[in-house]
Amino acid sequence: MTPTSLRERTLDLAKDLDTGAWVPTDLERSITRQLLTASTAVGCLTEHSVRDAIWEGSEPLTRTNDGRLAVLLAEITHSLASGERDTCGLASAQALLASVHRRA
Image (cartoon, rainbow, N blue to C red):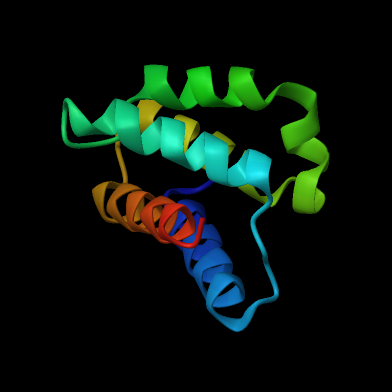
């Protein structure tokens, strides 16, 4: 994973969300709601909240919609754990999660 891969994945998913190529399932919307609720207190995603969401979704999340949200969450976790955080990518990813949540 590279610093730009989070941004690229987020842009691809946002485009697919807007065109209907990716239609989030109830599980994916539930996971995004959990992440957004957890981020409200601190104003951003945290490594801990993303890991909790991945754990909550567990194996079904990796099969839902080809695991697209699971891969995004892995990219977010990698960026949060990295010494060189991709703040732009993280902000874009959080905005995408909010878009998914609004479509619920």
